[in-house]
Amino acid sequence: MKHRQEWLGALDAQVDRLLAWQVTDRADPRHGGFFMEPMHVETRAVGFCLADLLAAFSTRESRHFLSAAVRDACQAALGYLERFQRPGGCYDLTPCNYASAPDTAFMLNAVLTGWQIARRCEGAQDLMPGLERLIRTAADGIAAGGFHTPNHRWAIAACLLTCHRFFPTPRWEARARAFLAEGLDINADGEFAERSAGNYNQVNDDQMIRLYLATGEERFLEAAERNLDMMFCYFDPDGSVFTNNSTRQDMGQKIYGDTYYVLYLLVGYLRGRQDFGAMAEWLWNDCRRRGVYPPGIEWVLLMEDMDGYGAQAPFARPMENVNRLFEESCVARVRRGAWSLTLMKNRPNCLYFQHGAMSLYMAVYANLCDRRNFVPQTLERTADGFRLTDHAAGWYYQPFPEPPPTSDWWRMDNASRPKTEGLPLDIALEVRLREDGAELRLHTAGVDRLPLRVELGLLPGGILSGEGFVQKTEPGGCVLARSGMLQAVGPGGEAVVIGPAFGEHFVLNRMGGAYPLSERHHTVLLTDYTPVDRTFVLRSAPQVRSLWNPQA
Image (cartoon, rainbow, N blue to C red; front, side):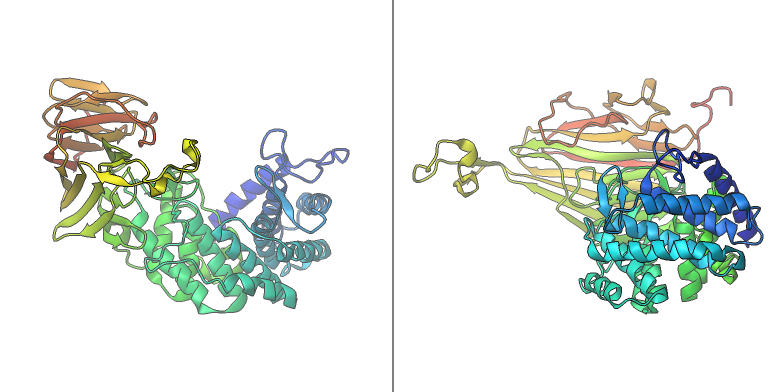
């Protein structure tokens, strides 16, 4: 389906909000900015707001087409940006980065898209001098600046090469090429270095698309395509994106795929991938189901025949049938319809299981010398699932052969001390896939009589029941289940069955450096002494209504 007209209604509503939020008092030094937070104008955000104003002002079907009020708002925003531009040409991201080239690049990328729409509109020509001045001075600042994180490089390069495309300036191009000479940080799995499915994957995809449009070099579009192919595997049953392996601030956050809508649409259209267009349509419908609109209308305003691309293509829902091991990313993702399973190497929270919106994570506490948790060092595929293993060496320091040069412990070269071997601990988690979930076999070798705990963190707001008990799952709650099958039911009625449970001790001490018991989750404990050899299931079950709501 085509969505341009409906989407324009959402843009018009956003412009209504921006007009209400704009500082119109000329005596206020922040005149032209936008109070998107109480009492504060975020400098960089003014550029993003300006881009929205330009898109509506320059589009004939918009309620705000050539509106005098929006024209004045654009001029006021340009005035604000001129006054608050740092002498070198850059802008601030006030929570952390000042005179920041990458944050200016993100902002200017948005302005450039709005400018491309506006420059085709005859009635917007009086805005062009101010916009061109902004573009040129900001590009100079970006070219002179540096960066902090991997994705910043691609924002800077994409922005400078887009500016160079429209206003040829060799020093901008040379600076962009210096960043690109470092090579794209995307691995064989299609994953960027920051492993951030909730945020920076889509940021990088956006920059790859902009780099392609600026240069025509297919390698950039191919990188976005590879990442989006991988992202098919990262959608959980409730439509959210799996984020628990992220290395950035989205880690563990509940984030939906809204920003991916226009990326699947763009790459599908540009690469002739109708399955991407169909995925975009699924994402559109998921956004509307939740009462929101995805961002990105400016791209459809620029490429009108892209609207609805692939929407009618047969859609096999590829994200609902997944069984992938991403070796370089150290993640295995499995999904069968309404449930998903994630396994992670090098993480104490090494397993996540989700049915519908009901999710849980698993960690294993096994404290031996300097080790606190089972942290898988291997993750490999087996005939019927996966296997994760970890080894903890029970070692002890010995005295130095010669007296050290200092008696200050913290200045001693303790890494070079002799060590003797103690009792080791080997842990293996074998995961056998089933149609309704997974059977887990946890077994150990080595040291005996060590108290081991399996910790299953359930999302709160539901009901947990077992042999002889029913309780609400509450943040920070905890229960030791000693036997039988457990059933965890989420607020929506989705159920996860766990068990059989086992409880041989109630040792709950926790030493520093251990993966913490979550204060946001309700934790189920399964306990035993080593050697352990326990098999239990995590499986989806039909929706439960009567337990959650006896009146249903």
